[in-house]
Image (cartoon, rainbow, N blue to C red; front, side, top):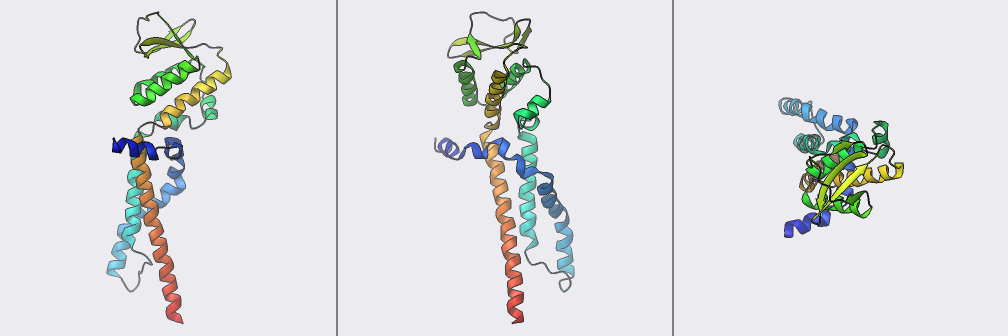
Length: 228
């Protein structure tokens, strides 16, 4: 219970998947990966030629920061939902040119993969907004959406009742946009422990980098002080 309460306390919108993207841009990645690759060579030079190669900071601290970042990068690449990668914004989704019906498949993919509490929230939202309506009809295949003439339909259980999420080709654009953000919201808040682990690794990398900056500043100050 304590663990769940701690996670709930720190699991706000700021630590959702879509806010991680900026930390894995090429310019940031190149800095950490470049140092991770060259640090062993620099360490060898400073050890074998201490009178020539002198670093103003401990090389292994920045290397540790690079390692922490590399692990975070690998986990993010592996675990970040494909929906968030493909559609970071609604404009990105529109650019794909999908039929409105396609959102039923995206709803199904999300509904099938996320944790139980997220699934219940997704169900409640589409029912409350009347995108899904109660039905007594039993489709032949309930385990996946059905493409019918009257629309693409996915039937799911909610509160001991069955509901049909149906989207037609001529669905209103505002409804499509709203449903997109409902699905986006559930994906971006999914896999909480993994997200918090990535944020922890990034925080560690930042702290270690800042420590090397402090060492670098102190190195320069000590040189200036010695010249007085």
